[in-house]
Structures are given as structure tokens and as C-alpha cells.
Image 1: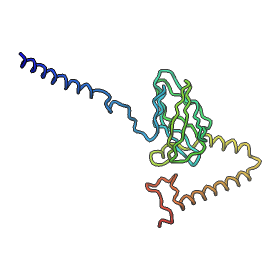
Image 2 (image 1 turned 180 degrees about the vertical axis):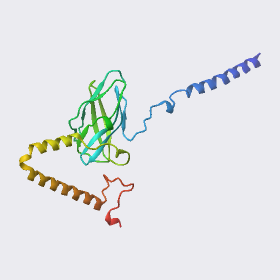
Image 3 (image 1 turned 90 degrees about the vertical axis):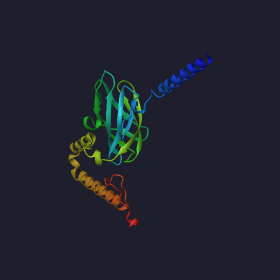
Image 4 (image 1 turned 60 degrees about the vertical axis):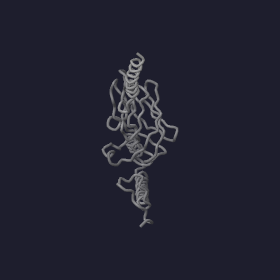
Length: 216
């Protein structure tokens, strides 16, 4: 009898150990977790997911918000404001409505212009304010209009509207405005030439950054 008891106990232990091991590794698989591969920042804490959010810089200090907004609830929610405490502000834009259970691609369906203290390669803090009262605080990378971003329109409505307003209000000073535009164009050409000479590749779309002249 003692021998039979020991055999039965040993068999019970052998049956329990594999069951315990299997139950310990049966949850929280890495493949079950959300893993969005994107060049921007993601935030899924609100009713609206902010996915792949980036700032596409058209030049130093100017750009637009791109990425996607995905609504997880049935009611419509809109992006009403974009703000920052780091010297970045948004221009005028129509609220970006995201239909219930819908998605909006900011690169193709809406333009949210931004201006301020940033350039390509920076990471800036932005607050996205929605109509349901929620705010998403994000650290957003700034990218340049190269490679996959060349298909994204970079003509900002705020610039066009400003140009039209200036043209209609300055009919009496066309010569002065023309001279100022010429001067601005020359300054821009000078800055571009200086960037090429010094090897500044902030907005260069070359595969490799150009070397400074002193390196040759």
C-alpha cells in the first residue's frame, strides 16, 4: 500500500506541473498587443485615436499637421484646436470632424497649418483639443517634405488667403510690395546658397547629407 500511495502522489505531481506551466504562458502574448508601425506618435487614450501624428515642415517655422484620427465611438467628434507651450501655434482651420466609427487622414482630408519655433528634425509638444472636451498631449516629430511625404500637399490655405488679402488691400502700393517681394526672394536664395555651402542638410532630400567644403 505505501508503494501504491507514493506512485499515485508522483503521478499527481507530474500532471499538475505541466498544467501550471501552460497556464503561466497562456496570456499577454506580444502579438496580442497593439503595435502600430509608423513614423509619428500614437495616442489611444481618448475616444479618438491619434495615429502617426507628425508635423510636415514646409520651411523653417512653417508646416502642417499630418497623421490620422480614428473615432472609437458612435457620436461624431471634431478636432477643434491645436496648441503648444513651446512657441508653436496653429493658423485658422475649420474643425476637423471625425464621424462616429470613422477615420480622417489629415494629410488628404484636412489642413491644420502650424507656425512657430520649429524646423525639420525637431520634436515639439502639441495639445490636440477635441469637441468632447478631451485633450491629447503629444510629443510630435517634425519631418521634411521628402521621400514618402512628397505627395502631401504643402500649399497652406492661410498663406494663400494672406496673399489675396494683401493684394486687394495694397493696390496703391504695388511698387513697394513688388520691391519687398523681390528682396524676400533674394534673401531666400541667399539662405539656400549659404545652406549648400555650409552643408546644412535640414531640408535636403539627398540620401546622404552633403559634406562641408572644408572636408574636401
